[in-house]
Image 1 (cartoon, one colour):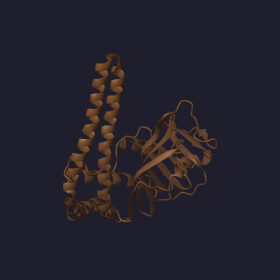
Image 2 (tube, one colour):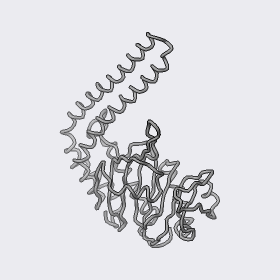
Image 3 (cartoon, helix red, strand yellow):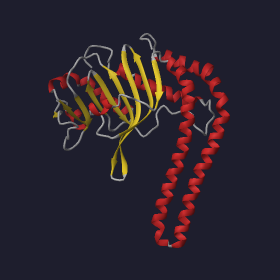
Image 4 (spheres, helix red, strand yellow):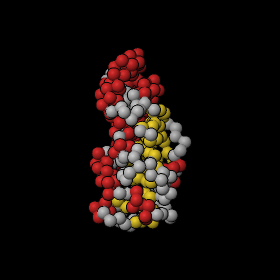
Length: 310
């Protein structure tokens, strides 16, 4: 994506590519979408019916088992949703492998992959995400914009707690190169009462901005460097971004000359190929495009291509 190309030009290029290249590529898969929807509906319905039947049998055997029955209905309801989601996701990834090279070309120097990310250790090392023992990745975008390397990683991070797994983070992580050289490590987390540091090497640091302090905790191994990086302009932009992305628990880290931002969300971002809509339904593809653009815009938003203060 060249520096001269505006966002309106990129949007126009994507819309044109969608109509002339993507739609003709999608149309042969409409019949498969319908078959997948039927199979997914049948499997989901089977789980739903089984749950209700077991509930009725338990109730008829002993009405005192009604609470167990509700738990079973809930469990089978979850299985029904998971089965639908798996059918949808399998079909979606199949289509994405076909069209994403065209989508990425509209952004210039960008590549897409799914399910595999080999540099995940930086999320734990940078402390942008708390300790976890399992990570599952979905969409991965790697690119270059205005001479700034960026990575967009959609993932879910969990940790085992007794007999279940607890979700530590689910959402999008954005990794951006910075034109500021620093050797320090600074982490910004949502404000907490006890100000517990994510690492023994990082100490809680108080900044002069009272309003920012009410919303965030700052931990660093170099308070002077932290104040150099977390400028008043950066504080304003971080607050605004929190509102724009509807992310109440946004975290970020300055680590190894990179800005790493964790945006939690329960939404499946970059999602296309709804099983209940025509395969070439334009709206879902336009939404995916806008979601990608909104994250790439962070480079402009934080002025990361400039060597001046943020």
